[in-house]
Image (cartoon, rainbow, N blue to C red):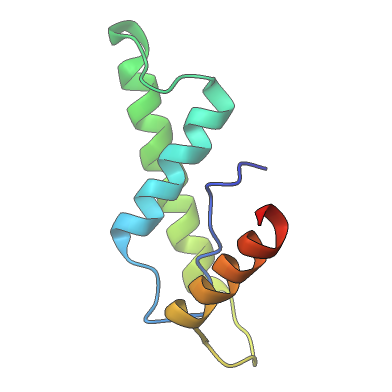
Amino acid sequence: MCRNIRTLFNFEPPATEDEIHASAIQFVRKLSGFNKPSQANEAAFDRAVAEVSEAARKLLTSLHTHAPARDREVEAEKAKERSRLRFG
């Protein structure tokens, strides 16, 4: 799994369209091996990003949980602490 793709479900406020789109770009880049596709592959790349974004949006709106929503700032602090402990 690509480490740059972040969990988007169960946050307050919910994931934005920009966050969903950015995760789709990262996913398609990982699958294709292209950071920036050639002109010949650009249409296919863009179509894949749009389709993955739509699938992610549908997934996020259809998921349900009883767990309380997570706070983005608290989760970011936890990640920084894990990184500090891991890398010093």
